[in-house]
Length: 136
Length: 136
Image: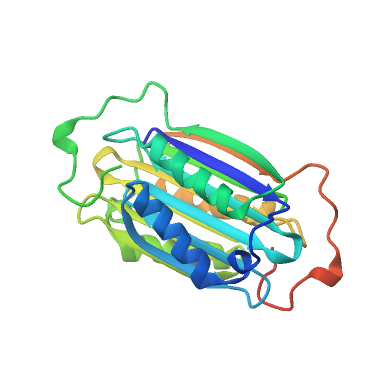
C-alpha cells in the first residue's frame, strides 16, 4: 500500500477552455496520458455539470486519477495516486501529473505530495501477488 | 476550490471479508454513506480484481470518494475529498470517512488530512454559481 499521491490545485488555467468544459475531451486526454505512462486503466467515469465543469476519475490497476474542473474560475483540482505494491510507479504518476499540468497550463499550482502507507511496511511477498490485472 | 481531503491508509481491517472482496457490497456501502451524509452522488465506478480486491470511486457534486482494497493483507486506502465552494462540506466528508472506518474496523489508520486550495482564495461570488447539481 505504500505509494505516492500527487495532489495539485491549479489556478488560472490558460489552456483551451474546451478542456475545462468538455467531458469527452478531458476524459480522452486523461486516459491517454495514463496509458502512455504505462499505467493500467481498468475503467473510468466522467460527469459533466452542464457548462459548470467536469468531474471524473480514471480507475487504475495502480490506484486512480481524479480531476475536477471549474471553468468559470479557470481552476482544476488534480489527484494522481499510485501504489507501489509490486514496483515503484512513482515516475509513471509524475509523468501523468506533469502532462496534465502542461495541457491545462495553470498560472499557479498548489502542490501536496503525500507518501502513503506505513514506512515500516513489510516488503512485498511475491506469493501473495494476485494473478490478475492488478499490478500496483 | 478550497476543501478538505481526508486520506486514510487502513491496516488490519477486521470487518467481514466480504467488504474487501465484493465490489457490489462495497459500492452499496460507499454510496449509501455518501447519500446519508448529504453529499450529492453523480456517478460511480467500481472494479473487481477477481479475488484480489476492489477499486472504486464515487463521483460527488462536492468532489469524490476513492477506495482500494487488498483483501490478502486486510488493507484499504480511502480518500474522501470535498470542496467547500459554496458551503463547508467538511463535516459531511468526516461523517463518510468515519462511517467507512467503522465498517472496515482497522487495527491501524495512517491519516493524512490535506486542506486544499489557496488560503487567500477569493470568497464565493454567488453569481458564478452554476444552476446545476454542482453544490461544492
